Length: 225
Ligand SMILES: [Ca+2]
Ligand SMILES: [Ca+2]
Image 1: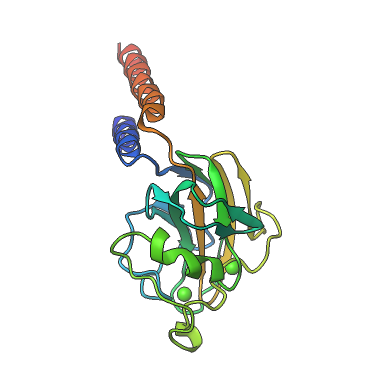
Image 2: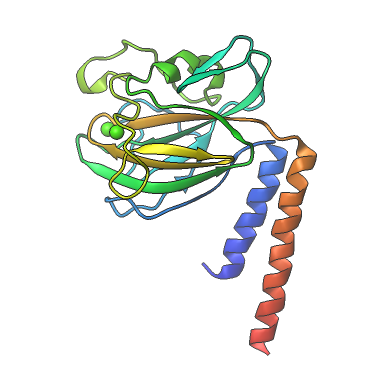
């Protein structure tokens, strides 16, 4: 993959971000202990334990532009009823009890982060999947399954010791979530709720991406000459 392909992909990403109103815009960070870098994916068919697995953090967009009809509980508080929100999920789920750590990953969203759901029992996630889940993805309910298959046992983060190397936890700065996860069994699933951005606000992003492409073309032409 050459630089043009990478920039091209970024421009297409900017287009879809503006048409979908809000999205995970980008992700950056080191590879996991399993040797896999973080990635943005399409919504998987299933988020149950060990049906869809990975070896590095993956994130996908869930329901978009949802009007909250009741206060929404997130870590440390609530988001007021009447707020419009977008939802996203980030997960690390190794197959079986393989231990994988993935530290210090920066997830950037097109809208400001309003709240995160990371409680270790997954209760906040369970309470909101019916209206924040991705259409077509199979979410389950607490109490379904037993043992390793029990979907809401230890699905969240077990600690919040920091986000750098060696830390499981997260920090929020505007549109950016910095996240560290360590999993054995079952895995970690975290839901991120952001403010939708109006379509006009997405245009400068696109203009910036196109401008960057023009600049790169100019540079490339010079080096080639
Ligand atoms: Ca964990
Ligand atoms: Ca697992």
